[in-house]
Amino acid sequence: MLSGRGITKRFGAVTVLSGVDVSVAPGETLAVTGPSGSGKSTLLHCLAGILRPDEGEVRLGAERVDSLSEARRTTLRRARFGFVFQFGQLLPELPAVENVALPLMLAGVGRREAVAKAAAWFPTLGLDGLQDRRPGQLSGGQEQRVAIARALVAGPAVVFADEPTGALDSTTGAQVMDLLCGLAVRTGTALVVVTHDPEVAARCHRTLALHDGRPVPAESLVSGDARQSDDRRAQGAW
Ligand code: ADP
Ligand code: MG
Image (cartoon, rainbow, N blue to C red; front, side, top):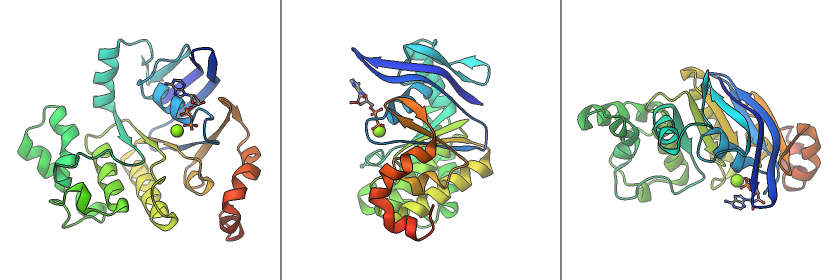
């Protein structure tokens, strides 16, 4: 179980998160939604031990994350967390399979074994035959599938995804989300997905909606987001 209690974060005089409580269990998928600037990425960074909250605490199981030193948080992130970003997270000079193998090699697994383990993810992700392609030779959706494999390959407790479908068309985005959520459930990984897209959030078990750094009822954001997605709402997504 990953949990944050009373998370408050300030940048200078500006309070970006105010007393946010959040938790996500193994195999559970949580969407963090809200308009641009509402504090979604900052919350993700606090939960993942990238940023230290000014108040409140973050725990992974019994372990307090936020009070660890920078070096120990880095070690914890590598060992227990996986990350998927909007784009640009793969190393362009490495074949896809080596991108996936990287977290294993960082954890001390030998190169041959790491590459073999990484390759085993490709059929599951609909990427069979693409192991040796460079990221520049993959479509946006394929790149995100590679990123998902890389986030999961080392068996993390939690995967954090920040706008993972933000650079994809809605059909490809839906496929990527289904894959990510399905794998999280199957592998018992907790998943935290930051998104401003209600359709993406709807694929998660639960939603935490933020407005100006405070939790708000999820429905209160619908009217704002509906401006962009009336057509999808009409199709019954909501
Ligand atoms: P979201 O992901 O919901 O778009 P962010 O968490 O990125 O929002 O940002 C929330 C607010 O905090 C924004 O007003 C942003 O400008 C501000 N902010 C984010 N990171 C920093 C930083 N490192 N220094 C100063 N302000 C920041
Ligand atoms: Mg953001």
